[in-house]
Structures are given as structure tokens and as C-alpha cells.
Amino acid sequence: MVDLSVRIGDLTLQNPVTPASGAFSWEYNDVIDLNRLGGLVAKTICREPRLGNPTPRMAETEAGIIQSIGLPGKGIQYFLDHIVPEYAKFKPPLIVSASSEDIDEFALLASELDVPDVDVLEANISCPTRNTTGGNFAMHEEHTRKVVAALRAATKKPLWVKLSPNAGDIVSVALAAEEGGADCLVIANTFLSLKIRTDNFRPALGNKFGGLVSPALKPIVLRMVYQVAKQVKIPIIGIGGVTKAEDVVEYMLAGASAVGIGYAGFRNPTALVSIIDDLERWCDERGIEKVSDLIGAVRDDDMEMDTLAAASIGV
Image (cartoon, rainbow, N blue to C red; front, side):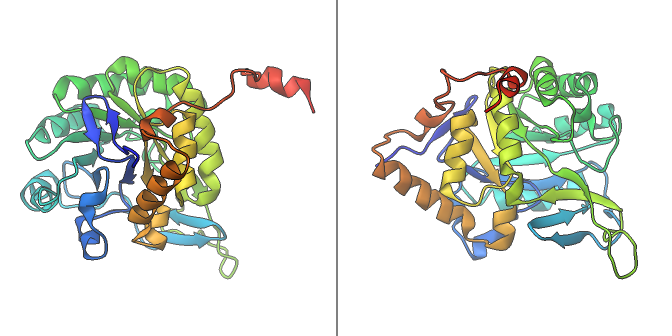
């Protein structure tokens, strides 16, 4: 039987399947066994209470959902007192997603999350509906380097940094996050999107813009994971369009050590454990003893690596 465990820095996950932040809660335990997951990822929290964005907050598309929730929550103290104890009932490590519009406040939040039952800090520096210096630091490499360095100095916890697919050059941003002290890169947050209603000509979301989650985005994020993995030395978590075991395999072949699942869990809460079962079966059928052997194992050494050079060759 295949060994599904993977290493993310000093942390071992029992398998490479985790939920994506904002698409999960400990209450999923009512329908699936949370102890089977590779990790538990809490919804992004902010230091102060937030009401979130105006409604409507979600809109369907032909192939996914545009959402603009706005990071609502009751603040850090409520999270530590009431939410962390709920996650502590389960065995997988707790990965806490956190965000702020201010670097100093972000660092303070990181220090306040440096508590025993929190295993990883996932820095959400890429909220798509915020500007580059107010929460979506990942749009710019220098902003990324500054905020990650501040977070690294504020916590001893493993620091995972969630990047934006909306950045013009995600490789440069990824390198800046690595230089700032990130232990792992999470690629990627949602794609900034817009939907307009044809019955009243108004934007479908109360915040106008939102983040698109869709299976159709997987090839785009997969390309980003592949490109970043060629340049950085730290692990990568791939997030975007994972709906089946073969998607996990693709991300790992491209260089990811694990994946996050969002949309598939919305559509079917049992999807995460089904994908774990199917991944185990897929590996056993092919005689793969360790799933970690798939990381970066894409066979492309004989192919042109430069995108522009490859495009100039034609077909």
C-alpha cells in the first residue's frame, strides 16, 4: 500500500489533501472524518472583528462561483477562545489563515497566533479585492518581501504564504516571499472577476468584484505552480480546480507537495475523503510506493523550457 505522507518543511502531513481556506469548517466532521485529511485549514481571520462585504456575496457562473465574502469574523480573541479548541479535537495539524491591511498589525496578529494548538500560519497576503498595499501585498514583489519578513520576525511557527494569480509575474513574487522567510508557498488565491446581471444591468455582487473559483482554472494555476517550482527551493501547495485524484497527481508532478481543495468541497462535502481514497487506489494500481515520489516528476527534460522560444517554433 502506498505511503501517502508528504513533508512540508518540518511538518509531516499524512496525505497531500487539505481544504482551502474559506471553504471549510470543523463542522464538516458531521459528514466526513476530519482525521483523514492531511491538514485542517481555518477560514481567514483578521485581528479585529469584521462584518465582511455587502451582499450579495456569491454569484454562480457556467463553470464555478464568484465570491466576495470580505473576511467576516469576530476577531483574534474569539478565534483563540472558541474556534481553535474546536479544531484541537482532531489529529491533523491546524493551518490558520490570517490577513491584515497593515504590515505592523499583521505582524502582531502573527505573534498572537503563536500558540500551542496552531501548527501553521498561512499568511493570506493576496485577498483579490484589496489593493497592493492594503491586504493584497502579493501583487508586488517588494510589498511581498516586506510583509513576509515582518511576519517571519513575529512568529516561530511554520509560515506558509498564499500568493495571488492576479500578479503580473508570480515567479518574482514567489522568490520575494522565499527571500522574506516563507517556509512554503500556497499557489494560488482566487482570480479577480466580475459578473453583470442582464435583468437590471447591475453587478451581481454587492462588492462589484469577487474571486472566481472553478475547475476550469486548474490548467492556469498548474502552469504557475510549475513555473514557480522551477525557481524556488521551498515547498508549494497547489490550489485551483482540484476535483479528482488525477488533479492531485498533476499538481504534484508540476512540483507541488500537496493541494488545497475549495470548490469541490462546496459542491460535494465528501469530495475530500473520496479524493484521498482514489489517490491511494491510483498509486497502488501503478505500483507507486511513496506519493512524495511524484513531486516534480514531470518528464519534460527533452522539451523546450523557454515559453517564448517554444512559441516561436510553431507547430
